[in-house]
Image (cartoon, rainbow, N blue to C red):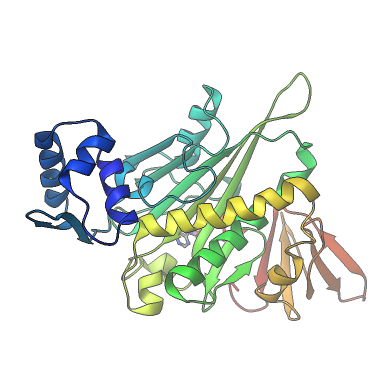
Length: 328
Ligand code: ATP
């Protein structure tokens, strides 16, 4: 009911009458009054004027089902939404939900993660009150070979969402990080589960972790991590960021499902690709080599001209790309 009330208050810039809320939510006046009181306790500023009704003045930066749900505008907005104050990992939760039948577009959000995951078994820091951890479920019918492109679509969606929310021009560090001023503001982890019988995709979980309100990072992350707050000096709604990411992802994903390659976003991606046209280091297991980053191919591979002048196509997976002397 809180989600419904907030949706109504957000849709109507002016006052919404108590009567209207009762009718839409099919509840009593007292129930509406109680829900409004509880929202106020959570930090919502709601103005109540006799004979006119309620008006939303401001909302707190909380990650709740009501706050996120009432801001959703994307095509998947009616799919299941699970929001946790703290969880092990939103990727793990989303995977569990998908296993037990949750449909495509199911979204899991958490304020904090105890075992946030990076690539190659690495850890992702998700402290409470400042981070956004979100994972969503895909249940595609295309072949598994196409799945590595999803990380790139998610990265571009995250970059576009940051621009819309905060006006910042982030860059993408291929394949799975979004960076601002050479430091990581978002990490992406795409995990695919296959059916053994038919070697087809059973489900894919796309997870994204954003640093939003942090005002500092612990020593070992300080030189490679940043937050929206550290870069802009302003606080932004994490719920709104989650909703913008969903809007941007779904829009791009619809096109991808038709084309099954990235030619439709290749130029935009390459224009914000960190290190493009510069020398980069490619780390693959124990091996390391250098070359010039040329941009992505329509299949999402990174094209790098090696020092012998040969163009190498780097596929995702076990490979990391670094600046010549630093992280980006
Ligand atoms: P790669 O280039 O291979 O992606 P990476 O270091 O960026 O390397 P990821 O798996 O993308 O690796 O992310 C995990 C790493 O990110 C961790 O090992 C840690 O160094 C760093 N990290 C962890 N939490 C955060 C955070 N909240 N913000 C920024 N960086 C983080």
